[in-house]
Structure formats: C-alpha cells, structure tokens
Length: 129
Image (cartoon, rainbow, N blue to C red; front, side, top):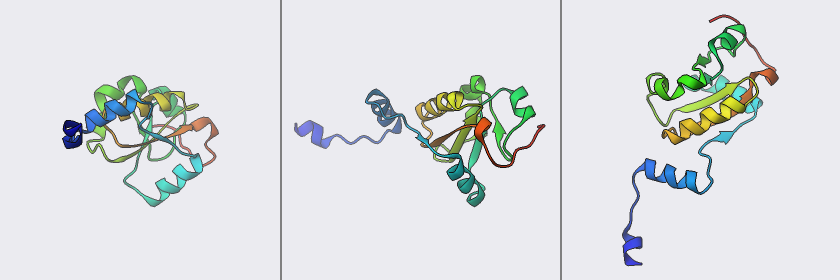
C-alpha cells in the first residue's frame, strides 16, 4: 500500500493507455454549431478533414486542412506539432472522423473533438483545393 501511495505518474502515454483500457475515448463530440462558434473565435484551431482528396476538392469547410484518414498516422506530426493544440475533425458522415479522433488521442493529442460529417454542415463551404 505504501508503494502505491508514492507512485507518481507523469507520463501522458501511460495515462492514455489506462484511459483506453478503461473506456475513456480520449476525445469529445461537439455539435456543428459549437464547432462553428469555436472556429469563429479562435484562428488557431486546426480544422481537419479526413476524407479523400477527391472528396475534399468537391466540397470542404473553409480553412480546413485535408489529411486523409489513411495518411493520418504518418503525416499528423508534420501538420500539428503541438499535442495540446485544439483539433476539430470531420469527414462525410462522422465515422472516419471518430476513427481519426481515436487515433489522435492514442497518439497523445489531448484536445481533440469530433464534429461529425460535412453532409449536415449548414454553414459556408467551398470547392477546390
């Protein structure tokens, strides 16, 4: 018992591992309205579109960054170096976004939100790159 009292966990990776084992998903779900409000108030938020490049070119949310889900593990560190940066993730319906959020949380990103899919986005969109 004495040993457990003296234990101090400082490593975020160990904490994340325990959270994943005991059911904490490591990210939050937010409404699109809340995402829109946050994005209009904070220019430092990373808005991440995890659909394919073709889907992104067809339509995307202004100021979003395209990073397809299959490239996330190898490319996210180049795009977002700060593991505490606020990241809002979306895709078409929300399924790939949820997978991306889980991956990001597992990689140590601490401020990740899933806003679902662009198919229900009621605000401004654009086409092209």
